[in-house]
Length: 519
Image (cartoon, rainbow, N blue to C red):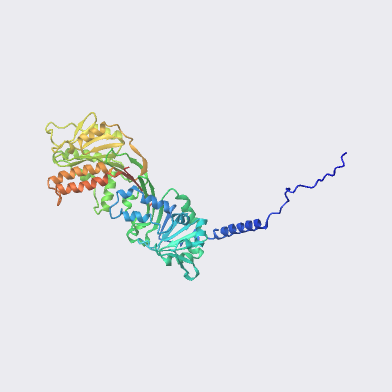
Protein backbone atom coordinates (compact mmCIF):
# COMPACT_ATOMS: atom_id res chain seq x y z
CA UNK A 1 0.00 0.00 0.00
CA UNK A 2 1.00 3.55 -0.59
CA UNK A 3 2.33 5.53 2.39
CA UNK A 4 0.77 8.74 0.98
CA UNK A 5 -1.16 10.69 3.59
CA UNK A 6 -4.77 11.43 2.46
CA UNK A 7 -7.02 14.13 3.82
CA UNK A 8 -10.83 13.56 4.00
CA UNK A 9 -12.04 16.99 5.27
CA UNK A 10 -15.30 18.36 3.76
CA UNK A 11 -15.26 20.87 0.90
CA UNK A 12 -15.68 24.57 1.55
CA UNK A 13 -18.86 24.72 -0.57
CA UNK A 14 -20.96 22.46 1.69
CA UNK A 15 -24.17 24.22 2.87
CA UNK A 16 -24.78 24.68 6.53
CA UNK A 17 -28.23 24.12 7.98
CA UNK A 18 -29.88 27.48 8.68
CA UNK A 19 -32.70 28.31 11.04
CA UNK A 20 -35.74 30.29 9.65
CA UNK A 21 -35.29 33.96 10.32
CA UNK A 22 -37.43 35.57 12.99
CA UNK A 23 -38.68 38.12 10.41
CA UNK A 24 -40.81 35.50 8.71
CA UNK A 25 -42.65 34.69 11.90
CA UNK A 26 -43.19 38.36 12.58
CA UNK A 27 -44.63 38.98 9.11
CA UNK A 28 -46.89 35.95 9.37
CA UNK A 29 -48.06 37.07 12.78
CA UNK A 30 -48.77 40.57 11.47
CA UNK A 31 -50.73 39.24 8.50
CA UNK A 32 -52.80 37.01 10.74
CA UNK A 33 -53.40 39.96 13.01
CA UNK A 34 -54.50 42.19 10.13
CA UNK A 35 -56.87 39.59 8.72
CA UNK A 36 -58.26 38.90 12.19
CA UNK A 37 -58.85 42.61 12.71
CA UNK A 38 -60.50 42.94 9.29
CA UNK A 39 -62.75 39.97 10.04
CA UNK A 40 -63.62 41.39 13.45
CA UNK A 41 -64.52 44.91 12.28
CA UNK A 42 -66.54 43.61 9.31
CA UNK A 43 -68.50 40.90 11.14
CA UNK A 44 -72.29 40.87 11.39
CA UNK A 45 -73.24 42.47 14.68
CA UNK A 46 -76.76 43.63 13.79
CA UNK A 47 -79.69 42.36 11.74
CA UNK A 48 -81.66 44.60 9.41
CA UNK A 49 -84.92 43.66 11.13
CA UNK A 50 -83.66 45.22 14.37
CA UNK A 51 -83.38 48.63 12.71
CA UNK A 52 -86.69 48.93 10.83
CA UNK A 53 -89.59 50.44 12.81
CA UNK A 54 -92.77 48.40 13.15
CA UNK A 55 -95.99 49.70 11.60
CA UNK A 56 -94.58 51.87 8.82
CA UNK A 57 -97.23 53.17 6.42
CA UNK A 58 -95.29 52.05 3.36
CA UNK A 59 -92.56 49.55 2.56
CA UNK A 60 -90.54 49.13 -0.62
CA UNK A 61 -88.26 46.15 -1.32
CA UNK A 62 -85.57 46.50 -4.00
CA UNK A 63 -83.27 43.56 -4.71
CA UNK A 64 -80.65 45.54 -6.64
CA UNK A 65 -80.75 49.32 -6.24
CA UNK A 66 -78.00 50.21 -8.73
CA UNK A 67 -79.14 47.63 -11.27
CA UNK A 68 -82.76 48.67 -10.77
CA UNK A 69 -82.11 52.34 -11.37
CA UNK A 70 -80.14 51.49 -14.52
CA UNK A 71 -83.02 49.31 -15.73
CA UNK A 72 -85.43 52.20 -15.12
CA UNK A 73 -83.16 54.74 -16.81
CA UNK A 74 -82.72 52.45 -19.81
CA UNK A 75 -86.36 51.35 -20.05
CA UNK A 76 -88.27 51.92 -23.27
CA UNK A 77 -91.08 53.44 -21.17
CA UNK A 78 -89.31 56.80 -21.41
CA UNK A 79 -90.15 56.86 -25.11
CA UNK A 80 -93.89 56.98 -24.40
CA UNK A 81 -93.87 59.05 -21.18
CA UNK A 82 -94.94 62.73 -21.28
CA UNK A 83 -92.13 65.23 -21.81
CA UNK A 84 -92.73 66.67 -18.33
CA UNK A 85 -91.80 63.26 -16.88
CA UNK A 86 -89.36 61.87 -19.43
CA UNK A 87 -86.89 64.73 -19.23
CA UNK A 88 -83.21 64.04 -19.97
CA UNK A 89 -82.38 65.61 -16.59
CA UNK A 90 -84.48 63.04 -14.72
CA UNK A 91 -82.96 60.11 -16.61
CA UNK A 92 -79.50 61.50 -15.89
CA UNK A 93 -80.38 61.94 -12.21
CA UNK A 94 -81.11 58.22 -12.00
CA UNK A 95 -77.50 57.58 -13.03
CA UNK A 96 -76.07 60.25 -10.71
CA UNK A 97 -73.41 58.90 -8.34
CA UNK A 98 -73.17 62.16 -6.32
CA UNK A 99 -69.40 62.28 -6.82
CA UNK A 100 -68.88 58.84 -5.23
CA UNK A 101 -66.78 56.36 -7.29
CA UNK A 102 -68.78 53.51 -8.80
CA UNK A 103 -66.69 50.80 -7.12
CA UNK A 104 -67.39 52.42 -3.75
CA UNK A 105 -71.14 52.51 -4.44
CA UNK A 106 -71.05 48.83 -5.41
CA UNK A 107 -69.60 47.94 -2.03
CA UNK A 108 -72.14 50.09 -0.20
CA UNK A 109 -75.13 48.63 -2.10
CA UNK A 110 -74.96 44.86 -1.70
CA UNK A 111 -78.72 44.72 -1.06
CA UNK A 112 -81.44 43.73 -0.89
CA UNK A 113 -82.87 47.11 0.12
CA UNK A 114 -85.76 47.78 2.45
CA UNK A 115 -87.24 51.28 2.19
CA UNK A 116 -90.01 52.36 4.57
CA UNK A 117 -91.67 55.43 6.04
CA UNK A 118 -94.93 57.09 7.05
CA UNK A 119 -95.29 60.31 5.07
CA UNK A 120 -97.45 59.71 1.98
CA UNK A 121 -97.18 60.83 -0.70
CA UNK A 122 -94.13 63.05 0.02
CA UNK A 123 -91.83 60.15 1.11
CA UNK A 124 -89.63 62.71 2.88
CA UNK A 125 -89.04 60.37 5.84
CA UNK A 126 -87.96 57.31 3.83
CA UNK A 127 -85.54 55.01 5.66
CA UNK A 128 -83.23 52.81 3.58
CA UNK A 129 -81.78 49.69 5.21
CA UNK A 130 -79.44 47.31 3.42
CA UNK A 131 -76.39 45.08 3.79
CA UNK A 132 -72.96 46.17 2.58
CA UNK A 133 -69.86 44.18 1.69
CA UNK A 134 -66.86 43.64 3.96
CA UNK A 135 -64.94 46.00 1.70
CA UNK A 136 -67.66 48.57 2.33
CA UNK A 137 -67.13 48.19 6.07
CA UNK A 138 -63.41 48.78 5.64
CA UNK A 139 -64.04 51.81 3.43
CA UNK A 140 -66.15 53.26 6.20
CA UNK A 141 -63.21 52.85 8.59
CA UNK A 142 -60.97 54.73 6.17
CA UNK A 143 -63.46 57.13 4.63
CA UNK A 144 -60.75 59.60 3.72
CA UNK A 145 -61.37 58.51 0.09
CA UNK A 146 -64.10 61.18 -0.09
CA UNK A 147 -64.21 64.76 1.12
CA UNK A 148 -68.01 64.76 0.58
CA UNK A 149 -68.76 62.94 3.84
CA UNK A 150 -69.03 64.79 7.13
CA UNK A 151 -69.20 63.41 10.67
CA UNK A 152 -72.30 63.96 12.80
CA UNK A 153 -71.73 62.76 16.35
CA UNK A 154 -75.48 62.83 17.21
CA UNK A 155 -75.05 62.07 20.90
CA UNK A 156 -72.78 59.10 20.28
CA UNK A 157 -74.77 57.51 17.43
CA UNK A 158 -71.95 58.31 14.97
CA UNK A 159 -73.92 59.46 11.92
CA UNK A 160 -72.43 60.48 8.59
CA UNK A 161 -73.76 63.30 6.42
CA UNK A 162 -73.43 63.66 2.62
CA UNK A 163 -74.50 67.29 1.98
CA UNK A 164 -74.30 66.98 -1.82
CA UNK A 165 -76.92 64.20 -1.72
CA UNK A 166 -78.90 65.50 1.27
CA UNK A 167 -78.51 62.12 2.99
CA UNK A 168 -77.59 61.00 6.51
CA UNK A 169 -76.33 57.47 7.01
CA UNK A 170 -74.88 55.15 9.62
CA UNK A 171 -73.19 51.72 9.64
CA UNK A 172 -73.99 49.05 12.20
CA UNK A 173 -71.95 45.90 11.59
CA UNK A 174 -72.63 45.23 7.93
CA UNK A 175 -75.96 47.05 7.87
CA UNK A 176 -76.28 50.43 6.17
CA UNK A 177 -79.03 52.83 7.22
CA UNK A 178 -79.70 56.00 5.22
CA UNK A 179 -82.35 58.71 5.13
CA UNK A 180 -82.81 62.30 4.07
CA UNK A 181 -84.35 62.84 7.51
CA UNK A 182 -81.91 62.95 10.44
CA UNK A 183 -84.81 62.39 12.86
CA UNK A 184 -85.83 59.20 11.03
CA UNK A 185 -82.30 57.82 11.16
CA UNK A 186 -81.89 58.58 14.88
CA UNK A 187 -85.19 56.82 15.65
CA UNK A 188 -84.16 53.70 13.71
CA UNK A 189 -80.87 53.49 15.63
CA UNK A 190 -82.60 53.70 19.01
CA UNK A 191 -85.43 51.17 18.56
CA UNK A 192 -86.34 48.70 21.30
CA UNK A 193 -86.74 45.05 20.17
CA UNK A 194 -90.55 45.25 20.43
CA UNK A 195 -90.57 48.36 18.18
CA UNK A 196 -88.82 46.65 15.23
CA UNK A 197 -90.31 44.45 12.47
CA UNK A 198 -87.85 41.60 13.15
CA UNK A 199 -85.49 39.74 10.83
CA UNK A 200 -88.07 37.18 9.70
CA UNK A 201 -90.08 39.93 8.01
CA UNK A 202 -87.02 41.18 6.11
CA UNK A 203 -85.88 37.71 5.02
CA UNK A 204 -89.33 36.79 3.71
CA UNK A 205 -89.32 39.84 1.46
CA UNK A 206 -85.72 39.32 0.34
CA UNK A 207 -86.11 35.68 -0.68
CA UNK A 208 -89.44 35.90 -2.52
CA UNK A 209 -88.91 39.02 -4.66
CA UNK A 210 -85.57 38.47 -6.40
CA UNK A 211 -87.02 38.48 -9.93
CA UNK A 212 -88.66 41.86 -9.42
CA UNK A 213 -87.16 45.34 -9.62
CA UNK A 214 -89.33 46.49 -6.72
CA UNK A 215 -92.13 45.32 -4.44
CA UNK A 216 -94.13 47.80 -2.37
CA UNK A 217 -96.72 47.57 0.40
CA UNK A 218 -98.85 50.48 1.60
CA UNK A 219 -101.21 50.93 4.55
CA UNK A 220 -103.74 53.41 3.19
CA UNK A 221 -104.79 54.99 6.50
CA UNK A 222 -102.30 57.84 5.99
CA UNK A 223 -103.33 58.37 2.36
CA UNK A 224 -106.86 59.88 2.39
CA UNK A 225 -107.45 59.55 -1.37
CA UNK A 226 -106.85 55.79 -1.23
CA UNK A 227 -108.21 55.18 2.29
CA UNK A 228 -111.78 55.78 1.09
CA UNK A 229 -111.58 52.53 -0.88
CA UNK A 230 -108.69 50.39 0.38
CA UNK A 231 -107.20 49.36 3.72
CA UNK A 232 -103.89 48.28 2.21
CA UNK A 233 -102.29 48.00 -1.22
CA UNK A 234 -99.39 46.16 -2.79
CA UNK A 235 -97.41 46.67 -6.01
CA UNK A 236 -94.68 44.82 -7.89
CA UNK A 237 -92.65 46.01 -10.88
CA UNK A 238 -90.74 44.13 -13.59
CA UNK A 239 -88.72 45.73 -16.41
CA UNK A 240 -87.16 43.57 -19.12
CA UNK A 241 -86.14 45.30 -22.35
CA UNK A 242 -89.24 46.35 -24.26
CA UNK A 243 -91.59 44.53 -21.87
CA UNK A 244 -92.79 46.07 -18.61
CA UNK A 245 -95.14 44.71 -15.99
CA UNK A 246 -96.97 46.27 -13.04
CA UNK A 247 -98.91 44.09 -10.59
CA UNK A 248 -101.28 45.81 -8.13
CA UNK A 249 -103.42 44.46 -5.30
CA UNK A 250 -105.72 46.27 -2.90
CA UNK A 251 -107.73 45.05 0.08
CA UNK A 252 -111.04 46.94 0.13
CA UNK A 253 -112.45 48.60 3.24
CA UNK A 254 -115.64 47.18 4.74
CA UNK A 255 -117.49 50.32 3.63
CA UNK A 256 -116.29 49.97 0.03
CA UNK A 257 -117.16 46.26 -0.04
CA UNK A 258 -120.66 47.04 1.17
CA UNK A 259 -121.06 49.80 -1.43
CA UNK A 260 -119.90 47.58 -4.30
CA UNK A 261 -121.42 44.32 -3.04
CA UNK A 262 -124.20 44.25 -5.64
CA UNK A 263 -121.61 44.15 -8.43
CA UNK A 264 -118.75 42.22 -6.79
CA UNK A 265 -120.51 39.86 -4.38
CA UNK A 266 -120.41 36.97 -6.85
CA UNK A 267 -117.16 37.95 -8.57
CA UNK A 268 -114.52 35.20 -8.34
CA UNK A 269 -111.67 34.40 -10.75
CA UNK A 270 -113.30 32.38 -13.51
CA UNK A 271 -113.28 31.56 -17.21
CA UNK A 272 -113.27 34.46 -19.65
CA UNK A 273 -114.73 34.44 -23.15
CA UNK A 274 -112.30 34.97 -25.99
CA UNK A 275 -113.43 38.19 -27.72
CA UNK A 276 -113.35 38.60 -31.48
CA UNK A 277 -109.97 39.73 -32.88
CA UNK A 278 -109.45 43.49 -33.08
CA UNK A 279 -107.50 46.54 -31.93
CA UNK A 280 -109.33 46.60 -28.58
CA UNK A 281 -110.51 43.39 -26.91
CA UNK A 282 -112.41 43.30 -23.61
CA UNK A 283 -113.73 40.23 -21.78
CA UNK A 284 -115.74 40.45 -18.55
CA UNK A 285 -117.19 37.86 -16.16
CA UNK A 286 -118.47 39.13 -12.79
CA UNK A 287 -120.40 35.97 -11.89
CA UNK A 288 -123.69 37.73 -12.71
CA UNK A 289 -125.79 37.38 -15.84
CA UNK A 290 -125.34 40.33 -18.17
CA UNK A 291 -128.80 41.83 -17.35
CA UNK A 292 -128.13 41.58 -13.60
CA UNK A 293 -124.63 43.04 -13.97
CA UNK A 294 -126.05 45.97 -15.97
CA UNK A 295 -128.67 46.62 -13.27
CA UNK A 296 -126.03 46.50 -10.49
CA UNK A 297 -123.70 48.87 -12.35
CA UNK A 298 -126.56 51.28 -13.01
CA UNK A 299 -127.51 51.26 -9.32
CA UNK A 300 -123.94 52.17 -8.38
CA UNK A 301 -124.11 55.03 -10.89
CA UNK A 302 -127.28 56.33 -9.26
CA UNK A 303 -129.88 54.77 -11.56
CA UNK A 304 -131.88 52.22 -9.55
CA UNK A 305 -134.44 49.88 -11.14
CA UNK A 306 -132.58 49.89 -14.45
CA UNK A 307 -133.30 47.01 -16.86
CA UNK A 308 -131.14 46.15 -19.86
CA UNK A 309 -134.17 44.73 -21.64
CA UNK A 310 -135.96 48.11 -21.52
CA UNK A 311 -132.99 49.80 -23.17
CA UNK A 312 -132.71 47.22 -25.92
CA UNK A 313 -136.43 47.30 -26.67
CA UNK A 314 -136.37 51.08 -26.88
CA UNK A 315 -133.80 50.80 -29.68
CA UNK A 316 -136.09 48.66 -31.81
CA UNK A 317 -137.69 50.39 -34.82
CA UNK A 318 -141.32 51.33 -34.27
CA UNK A 319 -142.58 49.21 -37.16
CA UNK A 320 -141.07 45.99 -35.80
CA UNK A 321 -141.34 46.57 -32.07
CA UNK A 322 -144.50 44.51 -31.55
CA UNK A 323 -142.89 41.52 -33.25
CA UNK A 324 -139.32 41.93 -32.01
CA UNK A 325 -139.99 42.78 -28.33
CA UNK A 326 -140.84 39.20 -27.21
CA UNK A 327 -137.96 37.86 -29.33
CA UNK A 328 -135.60 40.27 -27.61
CA UNK A 329 -136.96 39.30 -24.19
CA UNK A 330 -136.28 35.63 -24.92
CA UNK A 331 -132.78 36.56 -26.12
CA UNK A 332 -131.89 38.56 -22.97
CA UNK A 333 -133.26 35.88 -20.61
CA UNK A 334 -130.75 33.32 -21.93
CA UNK A 335 -127.62 35.45 -21.55
CA UNK A 336 -124.94 34.16 -19.18
CA UNK A 337 -122.32 35.87 -17.05
CA UNK A 338 -119.56 36.40 -19.60
CA UNK A 339 -119.35 38.83 -22.50
CA UNK A 340 -116.66 40.16 -24.81
CA UNK A 341 -116.43 43.47 -26.69
CA UNK A 342 -114.11 44.19 -29.62
CA UNK A 343 -113.28 47.31 -31.62
CA UNK A 344 -113.08 45.87 -35.13
CA UNK A 345 -112.24 49.05 -37.01
CA UNK A 346 -114.16 51.96 -38.48
CA UNK A 347 -115.73 53.10 -41.72
CA UNK A 348 -115.31 56.87 -42.04
CA UNK A 349 -117.08 56.94 -45.43
CA UNK A 350 -120.53 55.88 -44.20
CA UNK A 351 -123.41 58.36 -43.96
CA UNK A 352 -122.19 58.91 -40.40
CA UNK A 353 -118.58 57.86 -39.55
CA UNK A 354 -119.19 54.64 -37.69
CA UNK A 355 -117.02 52.23 -35.65
CA UNK A 356 -117.45 48.48 -36.05
CA UNK A 357 -118.16 46.82 -32.69
CA UNK A 358 -118.46 43.08 -32.13
CA UNK A 359 -119.95 41.58 -28.95
CA UNK A 360 -119.66 37.94 -27.93
CA UNK A 361 -122.38 37.07 -25.40
CA UNK A 362 -122.15 33.90 -23.33
CA UNK A 363 -125.11 31.55 -23.67
CA UNK A 364 -125.84 27.94 -24.58
CA UNK A 365 -124.41 27.53 -28.13
CA UNK A 366 -127.17 25.03 -28.96
CA UNK A 367 -129.82 27.55 -27.91
CA UNK A 368 -128.08 30.25 -29.98
CA UNK A 369 -128.44 28.11 -33.09
CA UNK A 370 -132.09 27.40 -32.30
CA UNK A 371 -132.85 31.08 -31.68
CA UNK A 372 -131.40 32.10 -35.05
CA UNK A 373 -133.09 29.21 -36.84
CA UNK A 374 -136.51 29.92 -35.31
CA UNK A 375 -136.70 33.49 -36.59
CA UNK A 376 -140.06 33.85 -38.44
CA UNK A 377 -140.17 34.77 -42.09
CA UNK A 378 -140.51 38.42 -43.03
CA UNK A 379 -144.13 39.39 -43.81
CA UNK A 380 -144.88 40.18 -47.45
CA UNK A 381 -145.94 43.69 -46.50
CA UNK A 382 -142.45 44.57 -45.19
CA UNK A 383 -140.25 46.40 -47.69
CA UNK A 384 -136.60 45.25 -48.22
CA UNK A 385 -135.17 48.39 -46.62
CA UNK A 386 -137.38 48.33 -43.53
CA UNK A 387 -135.74 47.49 -40.16
CA UNK A 388 -137.26 44.05 -39.70
CA UNK A 389 -135.21 41.07 -38.38
CA UNK A 390 -134.34 38.74 -41.25
CA UNK A 391 -132.87 35.25 -41.13
CA UNK A 392 -130.16 34.24 -43.59
CA UNK A 393 -128.10 31.14 -44.21
CA UNK A 394 -124.47 30.26 -45.01
CA UNK A 395 -123.65 31.30 -42.41
CA UNK A 396 -126.76 31.15 -40.24
CA UNK A 397 -127.49 34.62 -38.95
CA UNK A 398 -130.15 37.24 -38.26
CA UNK A 399 -129.63 40.82 -39.36
CA UNK A 400 -131.69 44.01 -39.29
CA UNK A 401 -131.45 46.18 -42.43
CA UNK A 402 -130.69 49.88 -42.10
CA UNK A 403 -131.20 52.71 -44.56
CA UNK A 404 -127.88 54.25 -43.51
CA UNK A 405 -125.92 51.32 -44.95
CA UNK A 406 -124.72 47.78 -44.19
CA UNK A 407 -122.27 48.93 -41.49
CA UNK A 408 -125.35 50.02 -39.49
CA UNK A 409 -127.06 46.62 -39.70
CA UNK A 410 -126.94 44.72 -36.38
CA UNK A 411 -126.20 41.03 -36.99
CA UNK A 412 -126.71 38.01 -34.69
CA UNK A 413 -125.05 34.61 -35.24
CA UNK A 414 -123.91 31.60 -33.18
CA UNK A 415 -120.26 32.13 -32.32
CA UNK A 416 -117.82 30.34 -29.99
CA UNK A 417 -119.38 29.81 -26.57
CA UNK A 418 -122.43 31.93 -27.28
CA UNK A 419 -123.85 34.54 -29.62
CA UNK A 420 -122.19 37.13 -31.81
CA UNK A 421 -123.79 40.58 -32.00
CA UNK A 422 -122.00 42.75 -34.54
CA UNK A 423 -122.88 46.35 -35.41
CA UNK A 424 -121.84 45.76 -39.03
CA UNK A 425 -123.31 43.09 -41.30
CA UNK A 426 -120.27 42.90 -43.66
CA UNK A 427 -117.86 42.72 -40.74
CA UNK A 428 -119.94 39.93 -39.15
CA UNK A 429 -119.71 37.95 -42.38
CA UNK A 430 -115.94 38.45 -42.48
CA UNK A 431 -115.59 37.40 -38.85
CA UNK A 432 -117.72 34.27 -39.35
CA UNK A 433 -115.66 33.32 -42.42
CA UNK A 434 -112.32 33.58 -40.59
CA UNK A 435 -110.74 30.58 -38.87
CA UNK A 436 -112.41 30.38 -35.43
CA UNK A 437 -110.27 30.95 -32.34
CA UNK A 438 -110.70 29.09 -29.01
CA UNK A 439 -113.96 30.02 -27.29
CA UNK A 440 -112.29 30.63 -23.92
CA UNK A 441 -109.12 32.39 -22.87
CA UNK A 442 -106.36 30.56 -21.00
CA UNK A 443 -106.26 33.20 -18.24
CA UNK A 444 -108.82 33.21 -15.46
CA UNK A 445 -110.08 36.41 -13.88
CA UNK A 446 -112.97 38.85 -13.96
CA UNK A 447 -111.74 41.27 -16.61
CA UNK A 448 -109.24 41.01 -19.47
CA UNK A 449 -108.33 43.91 -21.74
CA UNK A 450 -105.91 44.07 -24.66
CA UNK A 451 -105.20 47.19 -26.73
CA UNK A 452 -103.12 47.69 -29.86
CA UNK A 453 -102.63 51.48 -29.81
CA UNK A 454 -101.38 51.96 -33.39
CA UNK A 455 -104.39 50.50 -35.31
CA UNK A 456 -106.82 51.94 -32.75
CA UNK A 457 -105.30 55.39 -33.13
CA UNK A 458 -105.50 55.14 -36.92
CA UNK A 459 -109.21 54.25 -36.79
CA UNK A 460 -110.01 57.07 -34.38
CA UNK A 461 -108.06 59.62 -36.39
CA UNK A 462 -109.77 58.54 -39.62
CA UNK A 463 -113.16 59.08 -37.96
CA UNK A 464 -112.08 62.35 -36.39
CA UNK A 465 -110.64 63.67 -39.64
CA UNK A 466 -114.02 63.27 -41.36
CA UNK A 467 -115.79 64.99 -38.48
CA UNK A 468 -113.24 67.83 -38.56
CA UNK A 469 -113.66 68.20 -42.35
CA UNK A 470 -117.42 68.53 -41.80
CA UNK A 471 -116.87 71.13 -39.08
CA UNK A 472 -118.42 68.95 -36.37
CA UNK A 473 -115.51 69.27 -33.90
CA UNK A 474 -115.61 72.41 -31.78
CA UNK A 475 -112.53 74.68 -32.13
CA UNK A 476 -110.76 72.08 -34.24
CA UNK A 477 -110.60 72.47 -38.03
CA UNK A 478 -108.95 69.99 -40.39
CA UNK A 479 -105.48 71.61 -40.21
CA UNK A 480 -105.48 71.74 -36.40
CA UNK A 481 -106.74 68.16 -36.30
CA UNK A 482 -103.96 66.97 -38.63
CA UNK A 483 -101.37 68.56 -36.34
CA UNK A 484 -102.86 66.82 -33.33
CA UNK A 485 -103.15 63.53 -35.26
CA UNK A 486 -99.45 63.57 -36.13
CA UNK A 487 -98.38 63.75 -32.47
CA UNK A 488 -100.84 61.07 -31.38
CA UNK A 489 -99.83 58.75 -34.21
CA UNK A 490 -96.18 59.07 -33.24
CA UNK A 491 -96.94 58.19 -29.62
CA UNK A 492 -99.23 55.26 -30.45
CA UNK A 493 -96.66 53.87 -32.89
CA UNK A 494 -94.19 53.35 -30.05
CA UNK A 495 -96.42 50.87 -28.18
CA UNK A 496 -97.14 47.39 -29.51
CA UNK A 497 -99.68 46.17 -26.94
CA UNK A 498 -101.17 47.00 -23.54
CA UNK A 499 -102.78 44.15 -21.62
CA UNK A 500 -104.68 44.13 -18.31
CA UNK A 501 -105.97 41.17 -16.27
CA UNK A 502 -108.06 42.02 -13.19
CA UNK A 503 -109.87 39.90 -10.63
CA UNK A 504 -111.72 40.15 -7.33
CA UNK A 505 -111.80 37.62 -4.52
CA UNK A 506 -112.89 38.07 -0.90
CA UNK A 507 -112.55 41.85 -0.98
CA UNK A 508 -109.12 41.87 -2.66
CA UNK A 509 -108.79 43.36 -6.15
CA UNK A 510 -105.70 42.54 -8.20
CA UNK A 511 -104.63 44.12 -11.50
CA UNK A 512 -101.85 42.77 -13.71
CA UNK A 513 -100.76 45.37 -16.30
CA UNK A 514 -98.33 44.44 -19.07
CA UNK A 515 -96.96 46.83 -21.67
CA UNK A 516 -94.87 45.96 -24.70
CA UNK A 517 -93.17 48.67 -26.73
CA UNK A 518 -91.91 48.53 -30.30
CA UNK A 519 -88.26 47.77 -31.01
